Figure 1 (tube, chains in turn brown, red):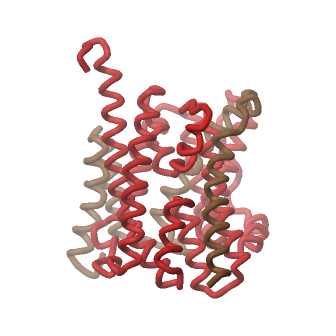
Figure 2 (figure 1 turned 180 degrees about the horizontal axis):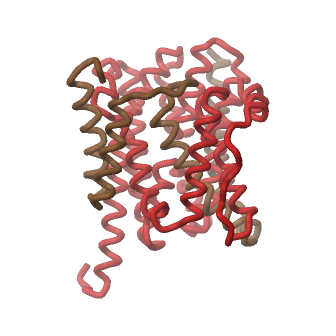
Length: 106
Length: 251
């Protein structure tokens, strides 16, 4: 019990401290063109990786979940049609939900 | 709003706020899954709530719950969860320049750094809209995630599977929508995004969940070290040796 509390508190405080560290790094550290380019491109790399892993990942394996991929496909179509943000995510979730409700094939 | 000349900027801010609120609500509901998983792994409701209130970063929270459920070493479980938090440090580097938060305001702002608030802030055309988007996502996601965590921990997680409502697609669809303008307009960005996704997918079978996304930062590093004119190819995906080494430390 006590050990679990220590793990919880250390994790919670460390995760917060890691966020604060990034926000409080002196700007001169990031003054160089390469550092600026890195800081600017890192969110693109991480968010693209998140999209890929959330689309194809399940734990440590890569899977094809047809409903999930169809939902993302609906998002892509909505984006190509320049739909508003809310339409994009509702269309994606709605497509996946409907396909799953339709049956075990999905 | 009264000044017509200020309308476009006000519209930008209003849209950023609306999108941030929407995303926070939609993604925050998955706190139900975290609360249910945390209690199932042996955490108390209070411990579950502390994690959501202070750590407030889903990947690390799920990782700690999984480690505790697995009955492995608490030290290794904690180290792995903390390691996953480093991606928020990388987000913070970018947000520091974008949001220009000063002094003590950085203390609450730091808490708000997540995948979602970063994605919304980066998608905005100007600083005012970026700040509004960040604030709205933080407020809406923080409240929803914490309420849902507690609700899931006390049993509401049994009401239904989030996937039945397609909620597992909300995150990737939203990130795609928010990255879309940068991918459409920037060649370097497209290269980094493709390389980052490839690295993460290649690493997935070899790493505990969460690590592959952090390894994708290598794609940004590769592009940043390359002359700006070149086509950023990133690095060939799949570094099982390096990944296994990191994974070993993370437990």
